[in-house]
Image (cartoon, rainbow, N blue to C red; front, side, top):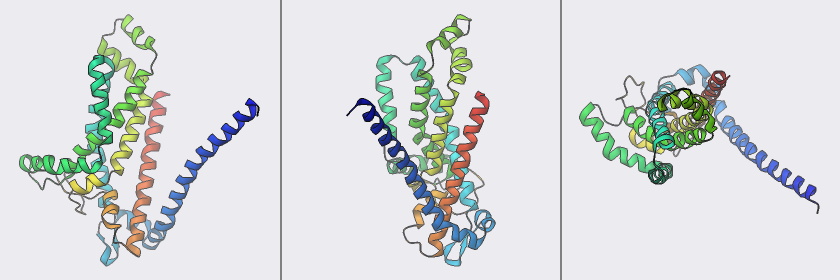
Length: 284
């Protein structure tokens, strides 16, 4: 068999593998929409999305409080995860001695390997009592969930952002320093903007992790189906609603949970598209 034929076979195999992943995604999307759309059409998109009462026993399936809670928790997680993640990335790339870096990098990667239920246990035992004692409220709150999620998305933001900064040509830094810029000015004015696309990608992935997290949030948020007015309020997100009730749901209730998955799917797609658009617009 000639080398040219082998290369064509390998090319077709790789193409098949790539198409298989897309096919699996398409099948999952079709299944979710096929199960959830009938309930949305039955209630009406406006009543389902903007409704504020979730009482399955009475046929009320309003998910607006859960949508708002999902955004609150995600915003809180990003508010903690983005600055802390970028600070860790800059420290690892620019100031960490090699010996220290050999310890810190595996430790940060280990954060991604910890099961979410362990984060939930830690938050339940340590963080929730602190919030309850010092900030009042029930402790099981959006604030507690945001802090836990902020730490959970750190490995994603740090690892991808660090790779983006390391991939920059050394001439960027050398040129800025040669022109008289300080080390910090070089990092903030040259290196960070040059690596913006990778940093934005890490934030997008972190945002997807935050809005899609379930187990830890079930344990920490308090699972109260109401419109949040403060970060100290208990809440229920779209994902926790599905995780809590899917085990015993049936009929319209089950379809409503799939419809909730549709809304979550669309929200994540819109947020990712917006972030990519803003990134390309700025880099352009």
